[in-house]
Length: 157
Image (cartoon, rainbow, N blue to C red; front, top):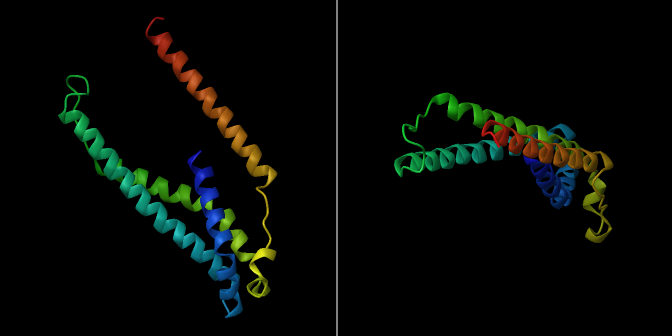
């Protein structure tokens, strides 16, 4: 679900910057440079968001352990793997989710910079993206139902 949100966000970003990307093409930017710039932005945003997530999640867990919300005997134990793995995973997911938008950024032609803004192409989301989104929602609901069933089975109810 997070990958779909990220992909949608990058699709909106590229659509909003379409005219700017066309101007860059007009002054000589290559398709690979546009592709690389979108992926570089994805790496930076993925890194910043992942670091914030790790820091805020760690602070939340530390606060819960200090305030005795957690069960007796549980303590906060932080390791470098608990920080590095989510950060790397966040960067990879963000880059993978932004690749479609980066590919569409390469489709911008220099002539699009000369067109009036109201005549630029506004495409709807593809059928593939809709199908993947629906499948992800169904899988998420199924996993939630399965986990509730597992909790009830282990608690004897």
